[in-house]
Image (cartoon, rainbow over all chains, first blue to last red; front, top):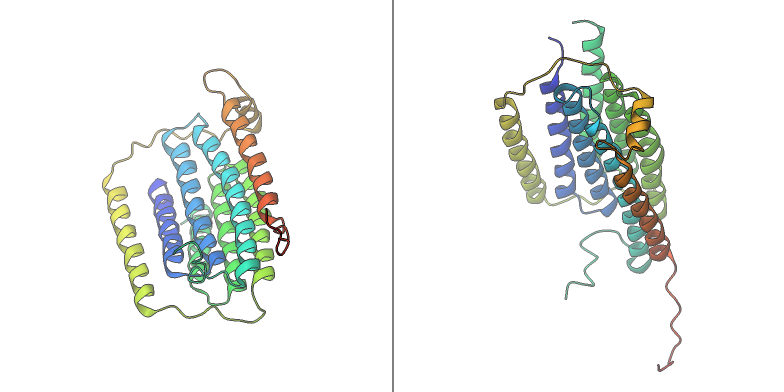
Length: 103
Length: 175
């Protein structure tokens, strides 16, 4: 059976919830960021698959993917700057330790 | 079962298995390397769908940029050879349960929906992509492109400001 849209949607769903699992089960900020990257990737796969199978001849999904990749790069850079700054002030990047704003 | 299909399943397995290992490995460096392989698998899926430009962008930005950034931040913040602390079993279980329920729910919706798959067309070529991205007509993407460039500039400035060392406070300097 030739793989088609449903196979790709299965992969992107699986990757999305793998990312969600990583985000929920980890307490280290860098590994939580990895979960977010997986989620963003699964969204990109969806855009490309829908563009290929349901919106052929046009390129809107392709441009959305490009913009999502650009925003993801900016987000990762800012997140890592914040993480390194947090490590400098708290000597830890565990979210349980970062509670200075909590009380 | 021709070569195309086999390649698809191999890429899918690479993306999903290494993604799963990336979120479960207790050695953070290994998790980053598994994330790298997962992103390469996704880039391979773009190649399989014949969206070569997106695949190249994925490799350049994600594999070459974001993963290297993550690995550098691991070097800066983690002690060598230290395992991530084990999480509480209840939290792991609840996270797995939430992820599995969401997965089942979304997959059920996707499989029940009947997508009207249209006739396949060749993937867009690079000239068309460039023309439309810079276009200012009805289908052009010039304005979002400019907005993204402003966003990237803001992120750049923001990163520099956040990463600057905090100014030394003079002891007893009452202002």
